[in-house]
Image 1 (tube, rainbow, N blue to C red):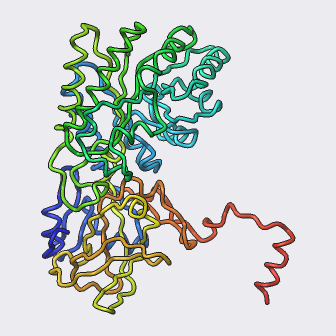
Image 2: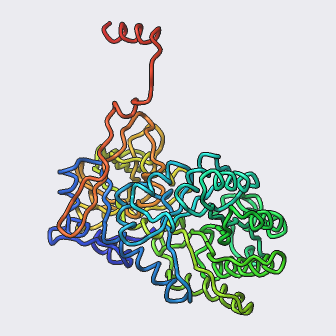
Image 3: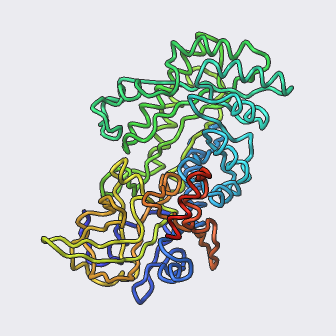
Length: 470
């Protein structure tokens, strides 16, 4: 835990590029000039706050990091699984971001958000015929991850009278992966074994006949390869190991089949500097420029030796773009002292931050309405659900009171998208803040919303109605 004297001092230590966080003279945290206390008073609590300028800056930074180091076009595709808020997708579409989608729902959101289909990929190891059909209709790239998908893509291309853009997803297990800890995978296996056991992609030997089938069918347009290992280490060397394996596979498959990619999708999982997914409060000392350098250098070192033209570089960041662009604000409720413990209850819970429960994510929490008060107590910050809902254990906080506001940083990734309604608690509203503007982008759910898809059979509805009146 980072020792905290005041929230203002903690923020100074925690600040990373892209943050739009400041403190007013009277000690209130602001997001791009907007008082968190006033936002809560206007829109209610808990409240998700999205900083538009941070979204734009994060996208521009990761694109710039790779574009400066790659000799062909770069397509940065927002991985909408991390946060599928339509307004976020629309902001990134304005910036020119492509899209990474799983299934018809994410594809729908990506298209509604105004994304160029030519810059979109569809992923997934169990795609339906309907998903393949829609991908062909829109002209997006299908990352083939199942043998049946090849025939379906060909059939849809012939039926629709347009070629299907297809790439092949690879499974790569270089020995160098095991130089790094496998703790991120939450198994007893090493990194290589964790990748081997994952359901995605084909190893190069198995890829050869699939690639031959794809390139032999005139209705299919083979465009390249995809490989996503994901974030398992923040060290740039880890990204270099993966990139080197991708380059080796490209060269091997070219020698076996004659196929050369027009685009190379190196996936996502790009580590950030302040990241709850590291399960620790310390900042990552490496930058996206470090990761881009390691990745591009490994790819270029191998691929340039072939004398072939360099493919476009495609990548699928999600958490890097949206992570620190979003805060979750909550009000303090009951404060309980007993057995040497202090529990500060919040009206947010791990319903809103499920990665705490599933992945032991570690979030920094600031006393948003008391940023200049010294940290005088060690408390557990908890949600009000009927599980422990431990948002932050043993945190240094000022003497908080009921009604105070706290801010949970880095709530952009895998928070709203996998939030739930446990204990029949409606989910929060979301607002988009900019230079002088605040816009509601997701209304607060109601209890009626929680049960909106439920139906009572008539035989049960009658007795339920009688019990209410009794």
